[in-house]
Image (tube, rainbow over all chains, first blue to last red; front, side, top):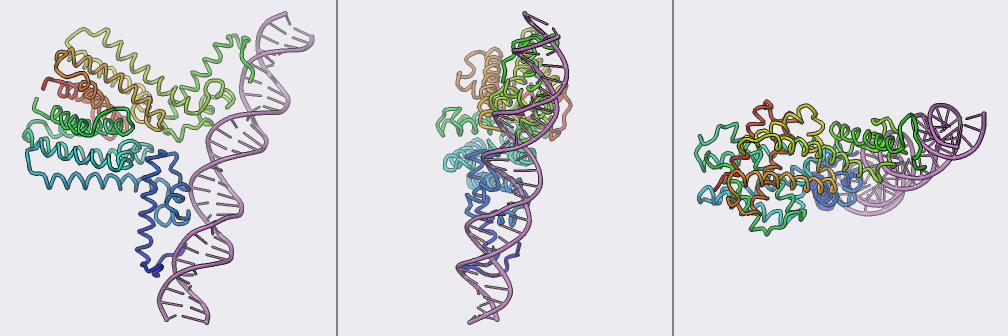
Length: 206
Length: 206
DNA sequence: ACAAACTGACAGGAGTCCCTGTCAGATCAA
DNA sequence: TTGATCTGACAGGGACTCCTGTCAGTTTGT
């Protein structure tokens, strides 16, 4: 296929290709949330993005690339929100944790597709699962760091703190997944409270 | 297709059909563990079970039926093992929990496919996810009950105890999944210890 | 104005998958 | 033995997926 170098429709070549890629990723996120992995075919992605199949290969080598891009996309959103809240909140560690939980619950309430992709459909393929594990690790470290602030750096050995974070994040992910799919009936506030409480329970000193 | 009523090869009709079903379920478990949901096609299941496609519809209406049967199969094994251990072990609640964890870790070590299906591939489709949620609920109740014995029935409100169990089981599932896929390096003993410790951490009195 | 670049529509080949149907050969009951 | 039953092998329709390729029409820079 020809490489874009000229302006078209008043927009530069790079502008157009990144826009197309963005539309494809957005379509992938939406389809994953609505129809799961097997329903997120390349044809369906292109149709939803209103682009021809040809443009799919302009941005991705395989279908799985698009799935990974979708997962990365929603995780960036989540991480950005969490980091933003942590930077802006300056109370006790408990308050900081609570604020992060609240912002996350708020995010997935406003954009359920973000939560569904991040938490429900993120282990559909081995590659996705691997990425999910990395991402969980990132959040687990964040959790472990906050627990160290809360209860002192020596409350738990580093390795234990990490596993603790892993189990907490994964458990929390399942809780949110059940909440998004309606399997668990809670208000957003109750969900936030429960998640914060459980974090404190798990990480407080032996 | 003709309904089996006659004996063949020295075995009754019912014997043959249940045997075929058993082989199909076993094949489905193995394929799920090895190649995931999308790799577990009906054709592949039949090939692995050394049976014709025709016999697939003797036991299942759709492919998803076979996947559900596979999940049920491994969960029955897990539950049976857990209940068996609980019945036989008569020490302190901590010891009982530890014994259950050890038996589970032992089971998935000897038959990784059981663990992989139960824990890694159990949310591949919406139907599977729903069943997985039910099953997690069952184990969560079991965990909540044990926690009530450990710390008294009033340590936590019933609803909270249930959510606590849910989060713990899901977190534990992810831990085991990471262990089975080699993403977390621990010995079987370390895994058992960590899991038991985390349970105690999470469920002890506020 | 005109050639080059870019775009969308669509055709179609190769590969799978699901599911049904046919058919020769093995096995059984009478 | 013989006719009904059961089994495995396999063919093939219909639908779908991925991916490539063609081509007319639009937009651009010169």
